[in-house]
Length: 212
Image 1 (tube, rainbow, N blue to C red):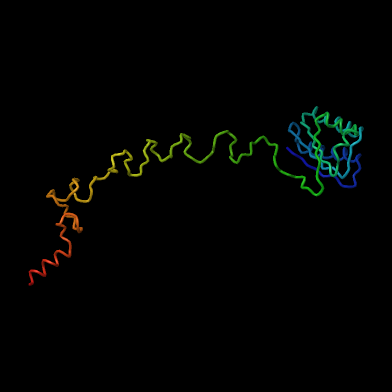
Image 2: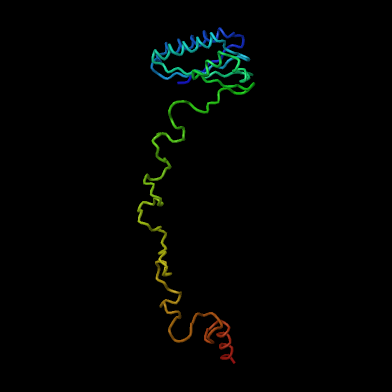
């Protein structure tokens, strides 16, 4: 569970812990005890928690954890320079106790929603079970999932190299021997190759001779 609160720009640092306590009390009233609570506090410009405030935050964190609440806090600073951490005992104290600090760029959207901390893998499938959820028939065997899984492609071709493609193997003349009637000519009614093609011009010539 992630809870985010923004503080009023006029709030001094003393109000930060008070606001934080109020928000936690509200959550406790909503029966969230025993759940993981993450709070993101978006702080005002140039906010820098003092030593006492940092100690109070850590004490409050310990109190929450003793009540069975996992308490983590991510603090975002606006226009805050991190090199000042070295001179600020409060910030160093927070960092040493796993309080996360981030720099919030001026005008930037502080709600990136990049993750939801809910334990899901957010990979687009709906079961988080590690399988591929790719919409095939579930066998993941690399075949085409065409129902028979017998290794052939069921496209009507034989694909065995003999060239007949499952048909009668004929070449257009009916007897599979390369010519039409085994008489030495091809009788294909084309013109030209054996002198006996019987094309239309030859018949016309014979007819004209008979008329004469």
